[in-house]
Structure formats: C-alpha cells, structure tokens
Image (cartoon, rainbow, N blue to C red):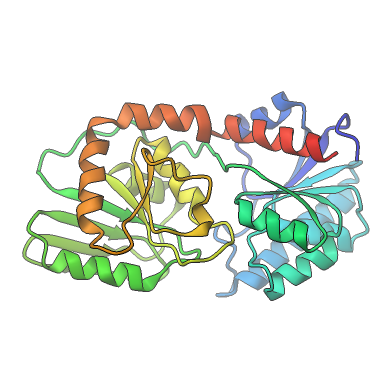
Length: 323
C-alpha cells in the first residue's frame, strides 16, 4: 500500500472539525466517512458486541454506497472487519483492543490479515506480529475539549476520579474504599461506571458512584478532580489511555496500577505507577497535592505529547514506515 495515496478515514461517532483538520494537515487522510449516530460507548441493547458490530456494518455500508476510492483507514478494528466483509482490501487500522488468544483476537487476525495496524500499546503489537500480522505501537493522544482551567478547590478536600470501564480491577477499587473509610484527611472519590448510582460518607471521606454520564459530564468531573486513578487489571490489551489523556488535557496528573496496558505511558511525573505492596491512598494524596501546584505544566505535557495533533503525527509516521 503506497504511503503517497492519502486514506479515506472510516470512523464511528461525530465529526470534530479540529481533529479532522489534524488528519488532513498531516497529509495522511483526504476524506471522511462516518456513522455519526453510533453508540458513544459501543453498547446497544446492553451488548457491546452487538453495538459495535451493528455500527461498524452501517458505516461500512455507507462506504459501499458513497463509493469513495481507497485506501481506507479504519478508526476501529471492527470497522475494518466490516470493510473486509464488503470486499475492501486496501485497509489500514488503528487499534486492536484484544488480548492475544482471545476470540476477538483470533477473529481480527483472520479478517485483517496483513493489513498495517497501529496499536496503542507495545504488547498488542508484539502479539499481533508474532501471530503473523504487521503492527506498530504508538502512544495515544487526543483533544477532547474538556474544560480548562478550573478554579482551585479551597475547602481543603482532595478529589479522586475513577472513570472508564475497560479492564478495571474491582479489587483495587475495594482496597481504595477500605483505605478511605479510615482516612485521616478529607477525600472525595468519584467513580463513573455502568453501576447504579450510589454514595456513602465516612468520617472524613465520601464515595460517589455516578452511574452513566455523558461525555461532556465525564470531562467536567475529571476537570474538577485533583488526581485520576486507573485501577487496571494486569492485562496486555490497550486500556486506560483515553481517561489518562483526558486528565492530562485538563492538567490533572494520573496514577495507574502496575499494568502492561500502560507500558510506554508512565513517565514518573504526569503519569505514575501506584505502589503495589502498600497503601495507595498516600500516593494519590501526594500526587494530587503536587498536581494542584503544577496544572499548567501537566497541561503543557499533554499539548506536546498527548494532544490529537501529536497522536496523528505518530500514526502517520507509523503507517508510512509500514507502507
């Protein structure tokens, strides 16, 4: 596949003019085909498999009807599968999001073959290549437009945010809640998930489970926090990156459990690893207090390395290398 021919990007979700401009300006993409009414979380009728499959089929059919010439850049691996099922061969893909050996991984390998793939974590690329594919890892980046700056808190409380459901480790959350029940300092933990909304208050801490929230509300809640915590399971597929990048965009530092899913993202400053053999709350408190004094610096790191523009540059370089 020649790197001199710009791609038609095939994607799910609403168009964002600034992000589209990044792709066009890179010279990698010349046109977009989208299904703008795709389910934001991928779920339809409580099934992510059904939701992603249906939305991917719809956008692939739009490509067939509109008939733009390839090559195509699928912004989701299941979109690429749908395009292949319609006979489109000249395809590149961003993202795999599947564990080696899983049913999803086997299906993707079967349908995507030797299509060039960009993964968001090194382990996915290594597994893909070992299975006969052609993958290059890049660091994810995005520009969500979350509110920045936000007024600093003056009530002396520290706000911790947990969001995103991919590869979440419930035991890590339970341990944090246990620490909060005995906390000497004042903390507010906000957990966004598909669970029913609930809350409890202890002597010094509060825990609020919001249930499902809109993308705008998700960003607002991150912007109001002092630190974002990623309690990830010990998996190898890409996970936690969208939440981490959204946090950095609003100047909030990130603490993650030690997981291969974050390989290449942890820098020890704006994204750090939680201690695995001791309590996590003191580490979260320390990073939160540091973050309050360094929001502009965290935001600058996002702009330089984790913005959508920076991500597009990395994807373009990876695909040209694989061409």
